[in-house]
Image (cartoon, rainbow, N blue to C red):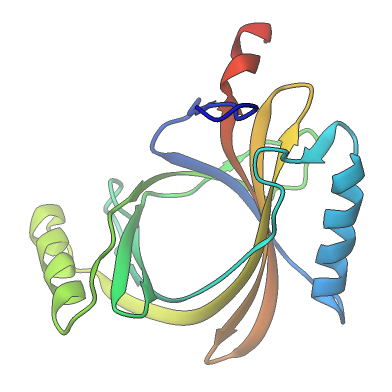
Amino acid sequence: MKRGVKKLTKEVTDSEIESKLVVVDDEPFFFFNKLVKALRVGLNGFIVSPRFPHIVESGSFNSYYQTEGNKETEGIKFLARPDVAKAVFKSQTELVNDIYGLGCILKRRELRGSYFPLDEGSISEILERENRQGGQAFIFVGELERLRKAFWIDNQETGRAYHISIDRCRTEGGVFYELEIEYIDKILDKIKSD
């Protein structure tokens, strides 16, 4: 282990807990950069993670498939990059109560597959297998192109780590910007203190 690097542990396995907010600002990346700057010096106990203090940029082309009545897998998202793709299986979404009553924190089971070679038929094979196992057909519901800027923060009091990103999403209906805050893990040396 590298000096100064702390291990993380999953408190909630196979699930994601996140908040997605539409950014209504003429300069969404200006807003994002102000947020990063504020968190670099610390804001209400949160700081940019010293484990990885960088901003990461990425992009993907996402295709979404959905089924009704299947509680085990409500939807499948395929994240495609040049020559490879990954399937992400999501269960039904639960709205989590938050102390501010905002109604924007979501929890759902999420299983991420490994990247596989993206060739003609690979996505169809996964959908056919899931249709056989679940007994219901997955229906294509849409796609979007996502360009993301992201960074990680730590809560110094609880030891929890979060991922913050801003996404430029382009669909057939136009372009929108989304801010996502997702709980990631807990820093291992903070577990005993709670």
